[in-house]
Length: 100
Image: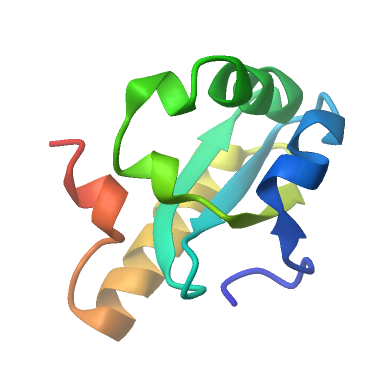
């Protein structure tokens, strides 16, 4: 797991995340990291994902679970997590790679 937060099941708890800035990590059914993201309001971002089925992003639709971490500078933390992931695995998470 990338963050210290416990793993949350997406459909059970994504609607109840707090309206705070933070980073989040999405996991597939194999507990593989598929996306590292950030938002100034996790509640809004997650609600949008739920309401639009991840904005029709086939990659992110594989999400089964997530972790989140609330902090004031989510963009900086996201960059750090992406860099750490790339150093460890030699690549970015699958859905982050597809964004370019």
